[in-house]
Length: 363
Length: 204
Image (tube, rainbow over all chains, first blue to last red):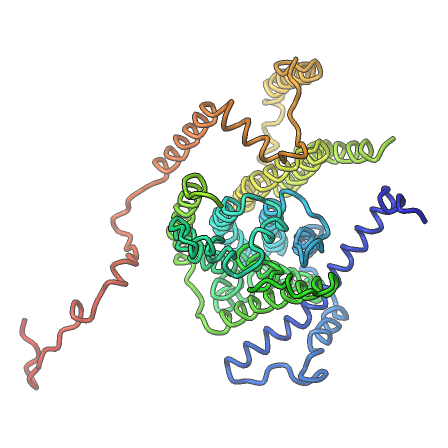
């Protein structure tokens, strides 16, 4: 078979489908263990054991849950809008995985290395609202509807501040391509974006580099909090606040449709962890340069891949800890935080970073 | 037929059918969902043109924000379909006139575009190896059209202020939470320890 085949339309399609399947399967299987880890962390904080029956340390708990969900009966409420009711979890699920197409796992390890990667992520995550709002409406029931509306309002609100935070990163790195953003932070922790991306130049005597350092660290914290709100995670899980709304938009869902909602939710959470890693914590790069060690190229790629996964897992543990430790917000306080604190702060950050890019000397 | 053409006809067909269903769907929520589908496939057409930035903007702005608010409003409304259809015959004539004018304009615009209208004699700028789409658009927008761009910004600002003025009401009977006041409150401002004698209470 000649090399042209793989560059042609059929070969390209086969390769891309293969890559997409690899990413989806990889994310799905890791999700099973991350879910287990989430429950273990939660249990650990509450001094419980957590899942510990299925498999060693309960590692296979998620698979047991999976089969339980799949083999149950799908119940569709009598008054539900059947088509929309079943479409909603599908949308949630598909979008959660579609976003992974632009995530670079290691140098060159990305399904679609597009120039508008960040905008694509923003677009996909803004579409994620539809799954929830459609599910809430189609259930034809009060609690899901209220949960859906709450969730939509919350996600739209926090998307605004996430958008501005992304703009600061884009300004700082000068690219919307996620691989370029990671490459901008290479060689050492001094170049990572949460320290302003130019700490090395600050240590070299360029005092202007103090500005991004002061701005980007709070921006990173704001991104983390906004990511919690965007994924409806505690302490911002008001759409499914069990004390008032039972389970929000998911009330009427059972078995596989519910499973799709849940997997979509967790895929989004891990996606947010990956985004924090890429945008602020140097993506696949280690805190110190490793290209001088004389490693073969494949080993370097493996190290980079493992570094990326390690960082994502670290942020996932942070997500899990927040869920266990922080009490739930009140809805008006959530809105206040989004519109009156995060939005103005991120706007100011955009202005400062833009001014720094123009006047702050060489980058 | 190339792959490009197949993709174009597919997405154009989806856009048109979705647009038609927006008008004909009985349930207004379904109408909005079809509208979203139409937006989405229009974004696909942009991608085919090589304008991926515009496609993403279309999705982020229209699908992600405008249509969500649309859906919000439509879901909250309790639409009475029978009532809506009652005056159908009365509005048929003026509706037809408006539709006719719009159709005429659309044909006209389409014709102008085919003849390359205002853009005649100019070559459209596309992404090159040196500059991506976004850079090309930014360069054009912020140099050639900087003043017009800022004027558009002012129009939006005025619209925003107008919306705020229209909806802002100061209701005196509503107790609002002042976070700053709560956070800056100290023990000595709010607690007083007063020795009280048994049987007498505290005299102010």
